[in-house]
Amino acid sequence: MHIVVLAKVVPDYEVPSSDFELVGGRAHERYTRMIGLYDENAIELGVQMKEKIGAALTLVSYGTADDIPVLRKGIAMGAEQLIIVLGNSNDPFIIASNLRLAIEKLGDVDLVLSGRQSADMDRGVVHSILAEMLNLPFIPQVSDVKVENGVYKLNQIVETGSRTLQISGKSVLSITSVPENVPRIPAVRAIFAAKKKSVEKIEEINAVAMGVEEISMEIPQIESVCELLPIEDMDDTVSLLLQKLREGRYL
Image (cartoon, rainbow, N blue to C red; front, side, top):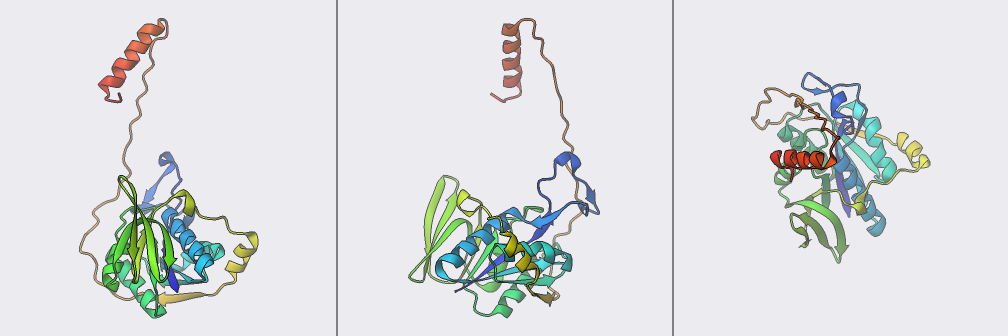
């Protein structure tokens, strides 16, 4: 069995909003680069499946050569090889087309796992576009995958809880975060070994964009207002506080 996990390198998603800065419509280069949070959940699930059933595990990404040192964390976590398609487009169709190129070059891939959405743009569309391009079923919001007699049993998170699905063929799954797939911390030895691992680089192909033009990218302006209440009479203060909470529809 061969599992492919898709991963994207993004700016530090834990930067406080007060410190966040855009340059040219994108996060400033001074921020630490890391693998997207949901992508790490997908890697962790892939590694767990590899350990349970002996599957081959390949990490595939679309980005620049500068992303390679960051992506090596996926190898340290347990992926066996890393393939990166070199490009810098932000268009989902172009990205999906180039990911398809890498996956088809691998040959017989049984399962494609991806984080449910990127940690920078939050679009959550590349995996479904890729599934369409590969002519495979797409199942979102998956938290766990078990393999029994060649059949995949999936746990899918839904609005009212979770449900169990079953699929017998190849598919593309978007992985959501649950306690069971929290990314492991790689061992020091694995981190050093990952640095020596060769990486396959593929030049991107020309692809048709999705036809949506980005006009601007802005940081929302959040205005903070603080009002101090009198404390001489606590009964009046409590009543005033409740009144203001109701006026603001917080209660």
